[in-house]
Image (tube, one colour):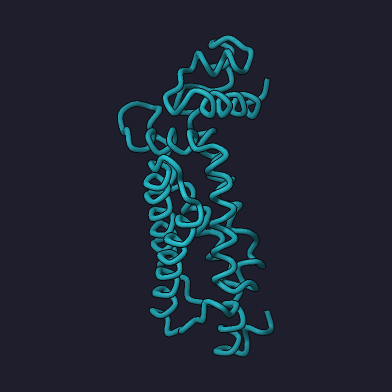
Length: 213
């Protein structure tokens, strides 16, 4: 049995039973014994990291491709990414709760997965690739990525605490904050961007060489 099959089973347990699972429940759902589970994962931390990596990859995919980030106006790109993110969160809210609670609990091997760091790292790589292709000074991009992801995670936790989470309100509020941070980052490099105009077009107007990319 592959690790992916066990991660799938673990996610089903979290969806069904909530964010405080047991390894026994994971094993039963996967149709294996706990010793067999530990032949695939060295400990809880290893399995939790695999669940977190799956979730981080899914969240990161919502940002779209490098080309999408370049060619779509920021307003459209941010809305699309946030709406895709909301769909993923609402499909597995207990997985999000499980991972953020695990990150907050710093005792024991099972607490070693840091969701914010994992997602921010992926996001920073994507934005750095875009910045290098324009080109744009990407110094400090890791700080921007971590700030954006940190805001999203904190506000997701707040949003999910509502009895009936309002997706539209969440997207609107996070959109405003995310664009504010991106705009500040660009202004720090002397660039005034219109959120209704693709970043590529804005930078091409400032730097004719960008149009050759």
